[in-house]
Structure formats: C-alpha cells, structure tokens
Amino acid sequence: MGELYVGLMSGTSVDCIDAVLVDFSEENSPRPHILATLGHPIPGALRDAILALCAPGPSELDRAGQLDSQLGRLFAEATLALLERAGITPEQVTAIGSHGQTVRHRPPGTVAHPFTMQLGDPNTIATLSGIATVADFRRRDMALGGQGAPLMPAFHRAAFATAENDRAVVNIGGMANITELRADGGIRGYDTGPGNALLDYWIGLHRSQPFDRDGAWAASGRANPELLNRLMADPYFSAPPPKSTGREAFNATWLERACEGLELAPADVQATLAEVTAASIADAVRSFANGGELLICGGGARNSDLMQRLQRRLPTWSIASTGDYGIEADWLEAVGFAWLARQTMRGLPGNCPGVTGAARETVLGGIYPA
Image (cartoon, rainbow, N blue to C red; front, top):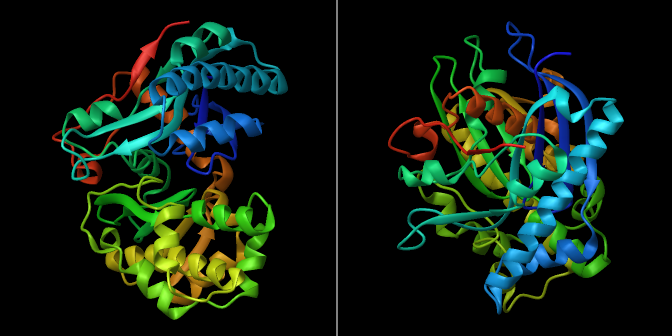
C-alpha cells in the first residue's frame, strides 16, 4: 500500500465530519488519489453546543474544554470508521490531518490580540486512533502576522494551477473563499463572505430543514433590492485582502439588523441571501480576471440555484465542479488537510504569505504521536 494519510474536516456549516483516506504515492501526479470517503454525522446535541459556542456566552471555558474532548473522540471515531470501510489498518496510515472545529476566529484587524480556536483534541485523536495526528494548522501563520486563513490555496496551487490560463477555485461552505491561480504562477486568496451558513439558518428557522436542497426555496422567491443593498453595504465586502471571516461577523444578528423595517416574505429573504453569496463571490472573481475557469467545491457546488446565479453574474467564465478536474467537490477540503499533514510531516511549508499576510512561509501545525 502507498503513502496513506487521513484528512478530517468540519467546517462552519457544522453538518458532518468529512473524512477521506488519501494515497500520495504517485509522486508525478499533481493530485492525490482518494481511496475512501465518509461523511460522519455530528449528533444534534453536539452540533447545538458547537453553534452556541460560536458566540460569546456564559461558562465558555468549561463548555469549550468539554467540547474539545468530545470532538476529539468523534474525530477518532470517524477515522476508525473510515479505515474499516476501506479495509485499512491504522498501522498502514502515516498520519491524520485534522482541521478541528472552528468556534472562534478573530484575525488581525478585528481585536487587539488576534487568535483562532479550533476544537477537537489531537491528543485524543492520536491516542484513540493509534495514528500520529497533525493539527492546529492556523496559529503558526497567525503568529507570523497572518490571517491564519484561508489555508487551502497552497493545496489548490499544487492540485489545479496551470500555465495555460487563469483559474479561480471557490469553496462554498458555511463561508466562501476564493483562491486565484494566475497562469503566470501568481496566487492570492481570501474569504469572500457568507456561503451556506445563513441560507441554512434561514430555512432551518422557517421550514425546519437543515439546508435548501438545490436552492429550490431560494429559487421560489425574489431577491429584495433594499435588503440586498443593506447586506452588501457591509464593509467586509469592500475591504482589501488579506482578510478572513466567519460566523462572528455573518450571523443571525447581522441578518436581523438588515431586515429591520422591511416587510419581507421568508422565501424572498432566502433568495436575497443566495444573491449575497453569489454577488460577493462574483465580485471577487471579477476583481481577479475578466474570464477563465472557475472551479467550485464545497456543499454549494450542489446548489443548482446558486450555480445559476453565479453564471448569470459571470458570463465570461467557465464554471464547473472541481470533480471535473479530478477531486470531488464534497471532499476537496478534507483532502487538503491530508495534504497539509503530509507537508508538516515532511517539514515543508503549508501557508502562502501572499494569501494570509504572514511574514514568511512556515511549516503549519503540531505533530501528536500515537
């Protein structure tokens, strides 16, 4: 068996743990080979605890400590279930790359002492899985003055860059981010703003559904121009990169304030939120280049209404899933953290200073032996 790594990712949507088993043994291939995948469920009570901790509240330290332990066990459980599905033993795996669950992200420019916090104790993961675990990827970049996000651009460059034309890779998870891959080798990336998080929140509030399948509910409504203008007036959208964001900025309170004084049908609010996601992504793409190939990954790639809104705003761009380029959209980020773990185990840098604003390239994360 080849050079095997596990990648674990739980994003701002908090819908499940994405777990992938990846083979990196083909040195001449720009893309790793996915051997197995697993969407491991996050119990409802645990998801509620995660979302509650994303905003300030009482007993945060106690809640965070317990959640760190619980998530470490859940990530280990996901790893072992993945390996059982693949028929692979822990001894055959070099390392796990675990992003952890972000519960607070305060990058430079938002607080006097920037920090980021991902939960899911890597000591627990390594002990229960029997596999060395690489985790805490973001804080070394922040120690060097960077945003600590986004972290996927270095992997996107390794997997998708081409000298033939400009490409942009856009991940639409709870938040959305872009990686600009210039044909001349230049690279830039940043968070564009909300992705699915507010769409999921709004349909959950009004229809008790976890997400808007295919964007059908958004497609049934009409975007409200005044609400769209209010939301797009947020200074984050016009701020220059490097920049990163999360639920700290784009949340229910943010939406409710913008809706004040307006009489809006719930479906129209959903349509407006879809337009905010599409407009903020499209503005970022247009600021990069006038045309090229746009590769979409994350849960938003399966939202046909959102894809149509993007295509209408970007008529000169060819838009496709990263699956059409060799790595399925649902698993790209988890594969990326397997790749980052491999970089760390090899003593190689995993950040892009031109993306995050860090002072220099650096090895990311810590290694927790089994």
